[in-house]
Length: 306
Image 1 (cartoon, rainbow, N blue to C red):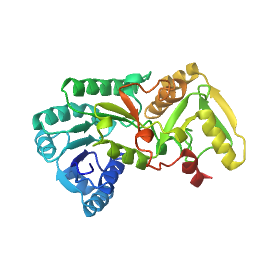
Image 2 (cartoon, helix red, strand yellow):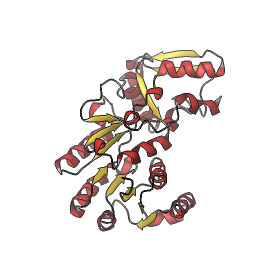
Image 3 (tube, rainbow, N blue to C red):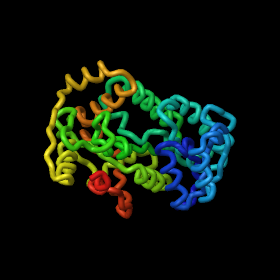
């Protein structure tokens, strides 16, 4: 345990950097596939240097460059993809490279959101989720050992403004609530996504399973989230509830990229797609498997915003 060599693709990205940091801190030989173009991005250069000084091995290449992909995969036991949504389809290339290498003990594709097999999304996000479903079926069909990580909501995506488009901090006067506010979502700090992901890579209990980060203290309805915030600021907010019909109209009428946010709020808060099902035999829950991980609660996360 703890010594599998891990290749992270997208390891300097939004969620990838936290997975990389967790891999290094948990003592795994860690390899990052990095584009040559990253050398011209000052932020990326600084991050890559800090990972190198922590022991990461930097390999040059990209998910679109098949030869570099196969070469990198042959050096490791585990492959984690943390690429951006725009590159989702490139992971079919990655599946092919993993098959060709033939040595990979586990593949974690770029998911880290809700369970795509159990969502009721509308466009423009439905097609993204449909593509991820196709990827899951391709991984299974090829017999590649996998773990699908469903981290649910990245805390940094919703909590800094409580899903209020246009605000840079949580609201202090009025809040718009999508749906009736009673469906529950799960909020996970990005560092904790990294920690739980790396914990799972060598665990036989997560092999060919979905790892759900359904953290009990962070599984809250929107009404509960607002009540928590109101208690912190000692003030009641004016609440405007939008029906599903109103939310769908909002999605239809709003240009990109804001349209994407509303479509996500629809699946999260109207449909309740993160929590409206029981975890079945194909899944395991992270905080039950790893009770030693002290994750950041929503309550703690909101304190600096008060």
